[in-house]
Length: 527
Image (cartoon, rainbow, N blue to C red; front, side, top):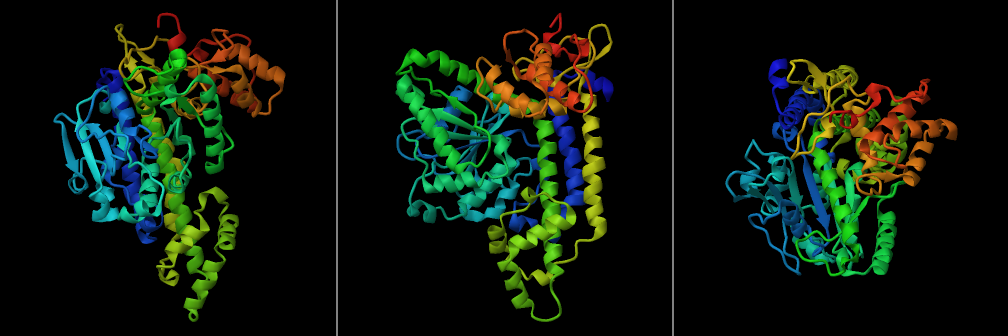
């Protein structure tokens, strides 16, 4: 097995790592989590059950926005070509969810047919019924980008009651499903229409718990001048701040993502830099796919455990008589019940669902009929999270080696390659920043405002100061990790700075000189 892996290209190795993790996670899900979810109707409360194809799926990118913000044109721009079923116009044209994915033969697969194909990650969609599947289709097209990523184009969101009633399916629930499944969520806005309709606001609220996946795109920005763009950008951040409750400013990519000449070309350089940053963010998705699969799996396991504990706690409140009145009493006091469960089991408040939404669903069940959450099932969940998942992560190390021409085996950093250019990095000792830490810090890094792929000192100081270390120590860390001494940091320098910061907080010291294993592979001599 080791020799087979060493002969793989880096693209193949990345793909195999994701498949290896997917298989391991689905085995754990089938054996430990699924029985608990099934017992307590998890699919009715939160999200449909997982299928094997879900664990093997390529990274997916969900595009959301109001009508005529350019979602479909944006996908065409990234692909460099049109795709089957593409419809573009000033009026609302996309009236369904469309999955644009790689296929040898260009074709459209209707939703009902796609939902029964076990090799596609859409079998869970049958939960939403025929009305939704009639509003879903798969567009298969041969494109290099789609070999690594699948796009999910959503219907243009209109204001008004008529559209909501005419959909025929639960739109917010479908959005919540996709938000939990995809790897990146792009919210597109038109520079001329920044108003956020009530339905779009409700759709954004369904993204709760997935804030780290969200990026914004201010599209059609060439149609306003520089002064207007400054005002539009500020207004967008203000509007988002009222809807998305997050302490951090969301990353907004500014540009005009189509193949037409810019109307105001004085911002051409800005648009090109923003375009490069956005593409770099999308390119990072396949490289980090395995780690994100683990992250989403752990989130789901925690939700399933919390849900089971809630059902067990509520069931235990019933006696032999007065069950109907007792259920009404519990539902009127659900917030306090959640607090008791959190205190009893040491759970974080953020692990609990919205009390009102939970009550709206649980009223359809007889709580007293819920089965017991057995201690052995909870122990199996805890053991899986504390023992089996870390073991699976350690097993990923086998995909982080390559054999050079001399026959020696060297560590490589899988995050240094681009999807189209998977060149081998220089040899030497393993980088001190492992892949799991790199993926974590990449999420933080790419949420900043980047310039030519780098974050400036002003932003980085705010992040480093959160460590609580003294300015003297942070200054020493900066001098060590700003390898090219340009007063800015790229993703590797930032990850290294965060590693050293955590090491110092745990009792370590700042090296006076940069050790060889601290130097990112791409910056070593010979790369």
